[in-house]
Image 1: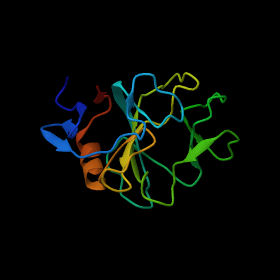
Image 2: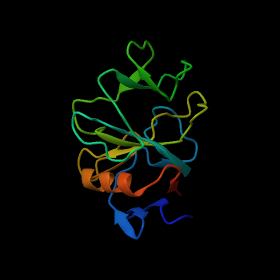
Image 3: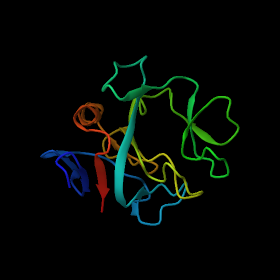
Length: 164
C-alpha cells in the first residue's frame, strides 16, 4: 500500500490519515460483480481518470477531463464501447454524464472492468458526490462534495481504491 491508497472500511474511506464518510452500492460488496446488481466490487481498483463539469466548477486537477451535454457512459454489454465514455448520438444503453443533479459534477474513474470490458461484469464504478449522507449508490462510492474535491486534489493517477 502507498500513502495515497484508499481503503474502504466500515467507518468510511481511509486515506492519508483521514476517514471520509461514504456510501457504497445498495447491493453491498461482491466479488462476483454483475451489470445492474447495485454492488460495489471487491478488489483493488486503480484511479484512471477524473471528469468534471466546467460549467459548474473550475478544473480540479490538471489531469481532469471536462464533460458536457453530449458525453455519456455506455452500460450496454452488447456494444463494443461497453464501460467506456461515448458521445451522442449513441444507440446503446447508457448513462448521461452531464446530469441535471450534481452527482457527476466531479468524478474519479476506476479501472473496474476497464480498459478491456468483460460483458455483463459491471460498468461505471466511480467515486462521485452522494445524494445525501448514507444514501446507497448503484455500485459506486459516493461522498460529500468537499471530500471528493479533497480526494481529487490529493490523489494521483494510479492511486488504488481497496475494497475488501
